[in-house]
Structure formats: C-alpha cells, structure tokens
Length: 391
Image 1 (cartoon, rainbow, N blue to C red):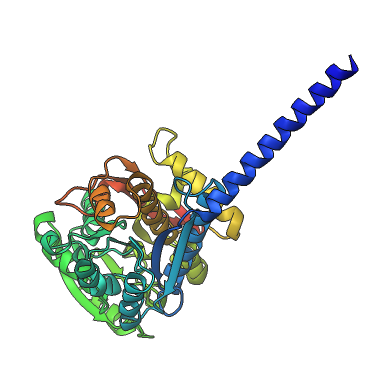
Image 2 (image 1 turned 180 degrees about the horizontal axis):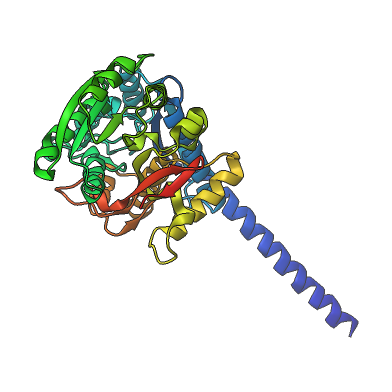
C-alpha cells in the first residue's frame, strides 16, 4: 500500500513538473518569437493633440490587450509610436523613420488630413500600407495612386451628405459655410461646393479663416447679413469653440449651427459650456454606443471598447480614439491572417468585408479604400452638455 502511495506521489509530481516545464517553454518561446511591428504616427502634441492623444492611448491599450492574450500567433506585438507634433515636415520624417529604420510592415495614422495627404506618396514609394486616421477623401483618391493607402474615418463627403439629408428633412435650403484653411477645411469646402447643387442646397455665404485665428466675429457678422437658414463651421481645435461663442455672443442662436465631426470629443462640450447647447453634427456611433438600439450591429463592440478605455484612462471615448481602434484592429487582423509581409497586408486590408468597427461596418475594395458611407453616421445634437440623437 505504501509503495502504491509513493508511486502515486511520483506520478503526480511528474505531472506538475511537466506542466511547469510546458508553461516555461511556452513563455520562452513567446519571448523568443520575433515581434510583429505596427508603426503609428499621431499628433500627440501641437494643435492636433486633442485628436492624437486619445489615438495614442487607444493604440497602446489594444497593444497591451493583445500581448496579454499571447500576442499575434505567438508573436509579441510591438507598437512604435511617433509624435508628429501636428507639423507636416515632422510627420514626413516620422513615416520615413518607421519605414527605413524600424522596418515596420504597416503604419497607422497620421492623425490629420494635411499630414496624411503629405505622406501618402512616401507610403506608395516604399510600398508599405498606411491606414490613416483622418478624413479627407484626397487621402485615398485617386485610387490609382493610392494603392497602399487606406483610411478609417468617414470621408468629408459622407459627413456633408449626412448634414444635407438632415437639412432637407427639416426644410433648410439656404446655408452659410465657414471653413478653416487647413487641409481638413479646404477638402470639406470643396465637397460643400460640389454637393450643394445636387442636394438642392444654396450656399449664400462662404467664409474662411485660419486655424490659429482668435476672432471669428467678422465672419459671423457677414454671415448674419446673408440671412441663412443654417450655419456650418468646419474646423478643429480652438476655432470650433470660438465659432460657437461668436454665434451666441452675436445673438445668432436662432439660426441652427452645425459643426463638423471634428467636434466629436466631449472635452469640446466642456470647453464650450452652455453655449454649445443645440449644436448639431454628424458623428460616428462610437460616441453614442449606449444610445444605440440593442440590435445595432456595432453596439456590442463599441460598448466593449468604451468600457475598457474609460476604466483605464478615466475619461470618455471620442471619435479620435475610435479611429485608432479601427486602424489598429484592421492591422492586427491582417498580421494574424498573413504575417508581417507588407504586400500581403495591403491585399488583405483591401479585401476586408463586413468588418465591425467603431466608425462603421467596413467593406473595402480595389475601388474604395475607406469602405464606409454616410449611413455609418448618426446626426447628433448637444443636449444638457451631452450627445443626444437628433430627431
């Protein structure tokens, strides 16, 4: 009997040692596996910091989650983040470094349209896929010269189209637009001018301003004299808040004010305060996950991301963090499917179908490197200092 017990103890000890050796071997194999790299360029500082900071935080959060799960097919995920400081020359240098020195097989970002357009040719020449977090349709068109470039933010054409649909449904046919002179504003202005006639919209005032301007009262005063039925401000950064305050201070709040989706950060509502009440804008559903019906296909993924982000960073999600979530997840899906081969990653992303993301359900193709439409947006109104679905 005693011998039997001793034998049982030896067998049990052997099992324990085998398990420990297996765990140790797996850990060593994971540690020894070549990391899969993703390069990232965000505007973490500078005028675009309120866009780039949540992008960086989101990308790092997803990296950590993937590595906790054992990496990608056993390979640790290495995220190399560069700050372009919201400056085009620095963005170009950052992308070149990621390609030439770090030899990344895929890049996410940049944050803004101007920088994204500026580095598109760099990605094309190096034949490294780039997934921009910015808006302008020019980032991915003409498609013949954008074979290696994708983007996850809805195009300005989608946002303008969503606005126009809402305006027409509410009897608005005469509008004023005011756009900043950045690549973001210039691209949208072209879309307003292009889409207005076919949408039955007349633009009665077309005002422009600089991204660093500190007074928009002259533009607002001129707009008021044209008696529009609605005003659209298209900019990012402090001028978004300035437009709202000028609109209120000049007693123009009887005219609905629309903002671009670049306003999609609850920090903007804090900065604008009560003056923002009633402001309208199209937004990606990532901003309003809890308001979506339970059968909405994106809701589950959005709520999971929202919970993880807000628990980790103690701040609300935004459109911009959602951009990083979508670009990271597309890159990870490609790495998981085809490994760190830039050409195979490019082909995989281009073939993406029914990919449920923060900004919509992506359906890429050789003719469409964005894969979204205006139907992936919701019309939102600021109500009691929060987002609400507009009626």
